[in-house]
Length: 153
Image (cartoon, rainbow, N blue to C red; front, side):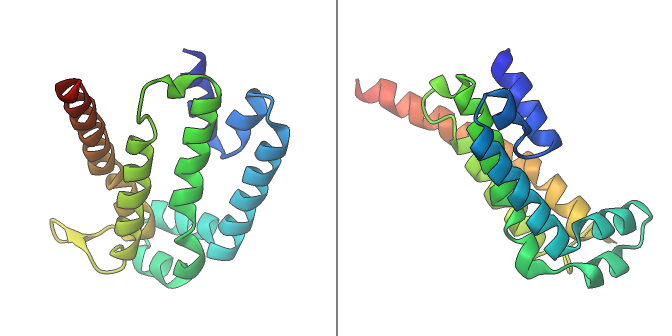
């Protein structure tokens, strides 16, 4: 249960889970990187515009070159906090995090053009939606690997 707490704090802000785990240097680095990428990508402005429904303005404000770093930073910080809190005891526990980072990155790449049901969701909502298939694929891959290992042993 403690690992889930650290994971949830990392969702709130990358680095918080590391602080709770006593990994202060890692926490400082993650928070610094979070602020650096956030500022360079104009992420807070993008979030505000997206919440107001100004998707085209959000797309125009987005610095995709910087925002592309965010999914990997975010999901790695989450996994790292979870693992350090003994949540990584399950073999291949990193796979769902890797797949979510991958799918969110793909969602970000297509966020300026891909429409779902005729609606352009932009650089905040589309990547967030892509977390779900990333998690499903990641958990499925993890399960297949476990079954394959059981089959071989």
